[in-house]
Length: 178
Image (tube, rainbow, N blue to C red):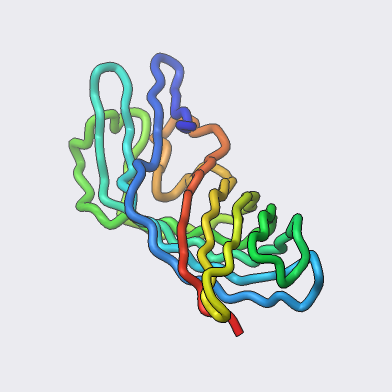
């Protein structure tokens, strides 16, 4: 969902556009139904402001670093293991575009070339499929929830940025296990 930026007379939506996501994870499966892992995702996605027939885009990317608990519905050693995950960490948003004094919708917010660190919570669901003795396929969808970024999307004087940012990311991975 989009965030909302508004002043006394008008409003616009602010969002992060979908983009390529790459990542790595490392985890452990010490317990029968529980495991834990650390994740890193790099997500490309431009910032966007739109409203009143105008729009502004700004190059950006996000780094997500989380620690997660996984609750499996089948015991360790099962060929197919559905799971749910939950955890938290940080989201580092970076505006990388070129700032402009005449940016459209500048009376509401500025899309800036800054870096902002936000706390993030994560919930997800997926499945692990054992392909071979030490090879696993994993498919998962996660919802990363964070507050609105007030530095990368800087509200103009007299304007307010509100909303909760949700970033739903689907991933597929090949994992080496030992």
